[in-house]
Image 1 (cartoon, rainbow, N blue to C red):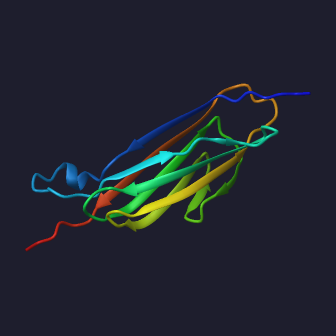
Image 2 (cartoon, rainbow, N blue to C red):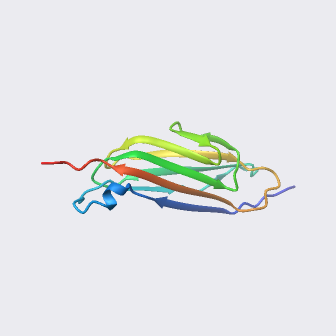
Image 3 (tube, rainbow, N blue to C red):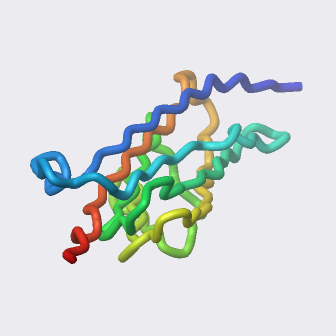
Length: 136
């Protein structure tokens, strides 16, 4: 009987658009956060999957949202959410806008090749632009 041991790591980064960082009058803004769920490993250990949740906890819509995932080492990706595409060694999910209070969930599945000896890691990064400030 063979057994496999996988070590899994998660990392998350959130970045905002430069317009808010340079604007001294911005008081309300979009605020995107995301988190990965616990990894799911198939009984045989040859398939690995993560769910993720992206939430706008801010007061305004986030526009031009791009969520990028990277698996280390690079693994063959077998399934991604509808809004996502596999682009080389990354998975890119794009959204025109996420309104204040909205939440989006997704999934990434990958095959784990036989004989892999290193730890498997998923890293994520989200970038976006805030909606224009309202004028009175």
